[in-house]
Image (cartoon, rainbow, N blue to C red; front, side, top):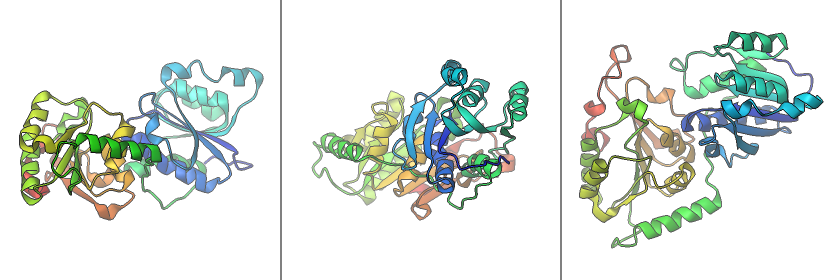
Length: 341
């Protein structure tokens, strides 16, 4: 464990990761701010994803970094012997980012990486290099907190993710919805439901069949004839959009692949219900605290993934296959629409 002689005045946090993992880093940032309330904390993340964490009250600044850009950063501080940060906390396996952090911070707490030369060099300089537990064994929030809890001796009971929708974003979302449902007879009808129907291309095993989503939406419409739906997420196959459109008509607003993640988050804050699968936007919904239903493949159980700000508003539906028998070839089709409905 790293022992600091004086509380740090400036802290740098770096985590180059996917949207969900980046947002969950806020749990560790909150713990750092509670331990060092007078410290100014900056965050650097993936160039296309760091913005997801913007607005957290604990952060002073947010910005981007990558393995390539890290190689060119921080040399002035090293040359003139002025390190702007008292402490840096870094997750990830990129040696270039670890070395950048050493150039700009006096003390480091970092995740052990595959580059053993870098690990040994950092340890020799008095920095804390921690071997992380498997993220498949413990909740993701606990995994992220390992660095600050074991590395700095900071303890926290709060594992809940938080997402901040800025006032301007909220106003934009309301206007977007007004325009999107302008042709509907009752454009403010209850409920307004957001749908995330696909995960990343590399995680296709998490996807629920489009036929099941169609049946689910048909069942919802039978219970709530005025229900409206917003299709969120990244680019979707045209046939999937057409299948949903055939059921919902002008009661479905198409936002998939048309909005940034922060714009999607703003729309989510206006929803009555979010229905999705295990992917980045589900972390955003959990951080906003809206009512939500999330479907999980047996390869990654819900309680190990989500850390919602309002757990009582979250329903996690998990694949019935036991973890020991699970494989990526097992289809999510075994979860039936009736169960979700």
